[in-house]
Amino acid sequence: MSPAEAGETHAIHCRLDELLAARGMTLTELSERVGVSLVNLSVLKNDRARAIRFSTLTAICRALDCEVGELLVIGGTARA
Image 1 (cartoon, helix red, strand yellow):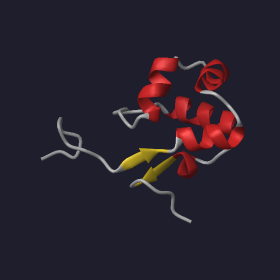
Image 2: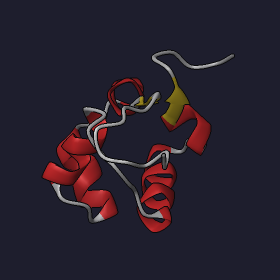
Image 3: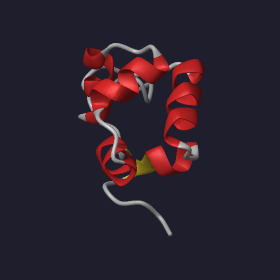
């Protein structure tokens, strides 16, 4: 069985809400800064994304001044 088969859940959690709040930025503002639609960012924010391009990940991390590991974590909490 392939790890990416349909119906399989994953343990990756996107901390976009927390990072936006910490920076006083809205999802709309992030969308404008990175050139990604509000709908696609919402899918990512709500842990419904099945994939993300490295270029999108790079743009989000640059706009939020964060590392990938701050944005995407295993489980529901960040590791210290």
